[in-house]
Length: 162
Length: 162
DNA sequence: CTGCATTACTTGAAACTTCAAGGACTTGGA
DNA sequence: TCCAAGTCCTTGAAGTTTCAAGTAATGCAG
Image (cartoon, rainbow over all chains, first blue to last red; front, side):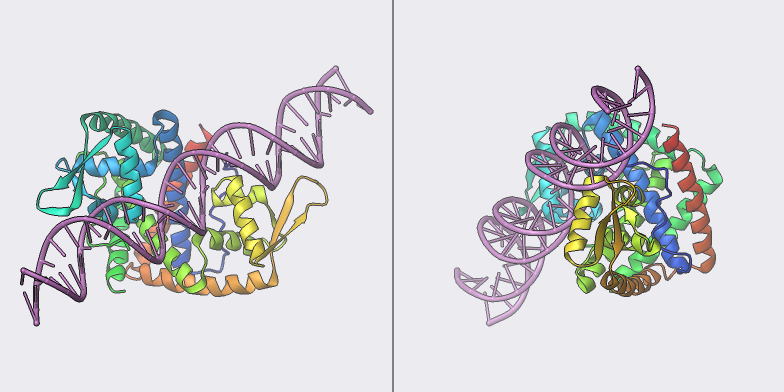
């Protein structure tokens, strides 16, 4: 198990630029939470964060999604989505059907069991996160949320400008 | 390649708690940057973010670090560190030596070539990040940095209280 | 000292991910 | 109609990461 006695945000030195320090801190926070949630998801549900994310997408889209749409939203490659969906399908969490209008595409949707399982995971997930973020004041939370919104749109624009 | 036309932060629905939405946004931002930087690092240097992070640790610690310390700081398992170090050693970036005071531990340090390579990667890294974060005002940046500091300490405390 | 619990690292298998190439289907223009 | 190009997904190989079990060295209780 990875101990946490040392602050992992020691990836670069003092003299570095603000932008870099900001990114490092962001990365550290994200990784720390990912590891906690991932471990909890595995411990309590035998699942994982990528699987949870995929189910969450489908929960939001009751009519199902095509694999390509999942790939976009989850920020992973198409091959990975195929693999994840196969695995979730084998577990009875999701089902595939052909799109009537286009013979190339598959539509994936939650099964009733998938919906039940996801609901239970989502409740637990929410508890875990609330605990991890617990010390942040509501004001800090909403500020952070807003600022990350700015950051996201900055990244998005830069992305498109490539 | 993963397209970006759709906002990936569509992982859960409207009714969810603030904490969850905050986490999702954080995760999305972090993943987007990770993918950009990882792709650039691979394209320009044939390297990767985990390798870069490991080198960065060593740059900050000229006397070298034990594998366990790297595992703590990088937030990855010991097995992974062994693997990364083997790979970087094969590339001539780092070198191992036994700790004189304890026959179980290895000390890893940058080679001169590793130091040179890292310096070049760090400069590029900084440019890329500056570009991605470019639209954020200095004020937003420093606020974000501070708030992420709060978040980090919240996670850390909760972690210890486990 | 001796033995046992602990610590540091490694290893092999399995989980997960990307990448590049390939197959099926659709679309649009000749 | 037919073909060429493009889109959607799958596949196989290679890369990366975790996990659990294993090896070697340490240190402490007896």
